[in-house]
Length: 300
Image 1 (cartoon, rainbow, N blue to C red):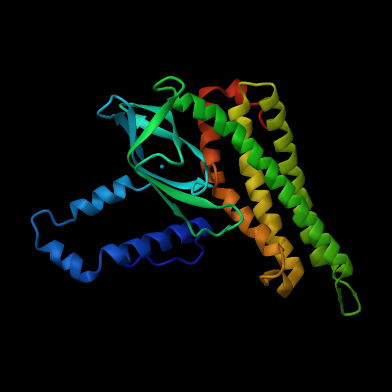
Image 2 (cartoon, rainbow, N blue to C red):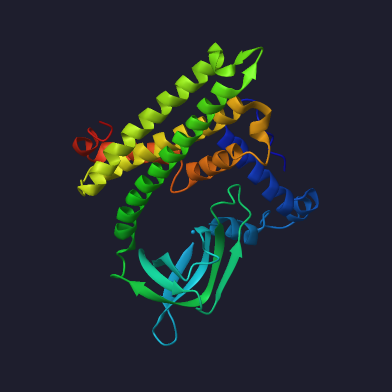
């Protein structure tokens, strides 16, 4: 089955199409489609179950000795191939609980992933009857994770602002020293506009970050909304500034030896880590509907 990339696709849309195309090419070649056509069901039930089970799908149950055991896979775990202790959210019955799994626990398979940003290692963890220790109260995982992830999003937003700041510095420094046609490229109007736009995006992101940090420090109930705003604006600003930094540097910015591409890779991976801007915009909209008085000051 072919899923063509349409002109004008967003980057996320194009990547989704590429992933879907690769998956379907492997699992649904024409010969397999024709084979399934001749069956009563007309589709591969095992393949559909596999598709439904893909992703952070881990379940917890009681083992033979009444201890907790985990089964399933968790993808894109930061430093998961090296961590001495992993905290795993798992579905126990109808509720999510939090479990601790040691590095030497049985039934764990760790697979390092080949990701765009090799400066931030990630791994896929597979659990097969792995003994685990319950952290906190059973069924309390969602509440705990909500608080932790809000603060983690703010911390990541701070990193993004720092990275974007450095990219802007690199671009300005290069624009001052790189000479073309007898004058620094920073004197050209097009380059000035790029740097100005980068600064505006960075300062907007920085303001949203400061608001989220204040609310996190005060344990303000409006933090979830501010965290989503900060993660959105800081993700977009970092990616924009990192890309424009490469453009200002021209051909040299694309080379492996130059650090500009490392910042771009980190910016792209950070954009999707802990939720994409699209996810956080939807989340903010839901929070606004639930408690508009708490979210009204989130961006100010």
